[in-house]
Amino acid sequence: MSEPEMNKEQRISAFATLGSAMRDAASGTSGISSSRFINLIDTLEGSNPWFTPENVRKAVGAIGDKLTYDNLSEWLKRYPEIPDHMIASTVGVVMAGNIPLVGFHDMLCVLITGNRLNAKLSSKDDLLIRAVTEVLTEAEPALGSCISLTDGTLSGFDAVIATGSDNTSRYFEYYFRDYPSIIRRTRNSVAVLDGTENDEELRVLGEDVFAYFGLGCRSISKLYIPERYDINRLTSCWQTWEKLRKHHKYAVNYDHNKALMIVNRQHFTDTGYLLLRQESSLTPPMAVLNFEYYPSSKRLKSELETAENLIQCVTGHGSTPLGKAQQPELWDYADAVDTILFLLKKIPRGEHILKNIKLHRLKQ
Image (cartoon, rainbow, N blue to C red):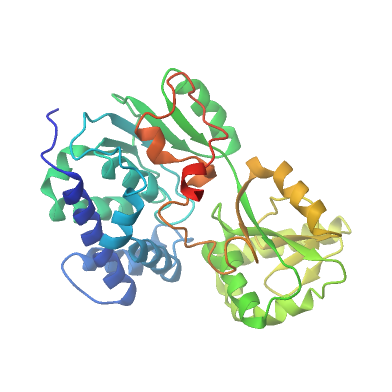
């Protein structure tokens, strides 16, 4: 395969054009490119009940807001070693499909660095990724030779990025054992409240908890709250989310988990659309939110550090702002593994499973 005639500026411009189309689609502004996304916003729920118009619009808009020319340029300034033209590698990307466009950031990282993308799409989220590809290749035709999408088995790749559950990650580790790889596992996100939050902060925390039905790795699955905190203050700020009871599949999960907790004689608070329980686990089932009281900030800090490899995002004062968990910046990498550095081969070959690569450069 011949190398595409593209420089870094052209790649940035292509993704900025994509961002404009996605912002237009999220706002309902019809255009040649945005219409692809508008049509999918309105129709995807028919094939995937979790991809409601509200959630698809939210995902398209959140990504579009980040894909501006200035934002993309600022991000890539952190990597002066990215050349205008480079000897491209083919990177296999196994995409998840739990929320709309969850695999997009890996796609962006591969292409923006001048590499070729060979993506295995999830059947739950193939149409949005194909729409992204169409808009990108219209904006920059040279990208057409850099993108290969498949529903089958990946082949012909030099490195791999694979996202899945804890179970599938073991398969990925074995199957891709001879390649440089990033293997992502199940992670959850938490919110830390200190008791000084105002009602607006608690209201937008609801977005972190309920958006995408809590299916994303950045969805808040557990709250850490001070001792003697009034949990009813939270529920009074979340009443707008009663609408979730109207979603059949969510309601089935709510009813099922409520019945199990009653049978098991578990104590819980029932809001009519959410079950809150005092529980140490980071992974509650759908329609259940765990919480835990913490006696001191020092002890909580130690606990969070111990669970670092299980947590995707921490929100609260001094961390990611409440309400922003589902809106990561371009440089907020999944599992705290710098995908760009991996693609630039800054990670030694042979370290196939990347576990604890921190973003020291980005925090400087």
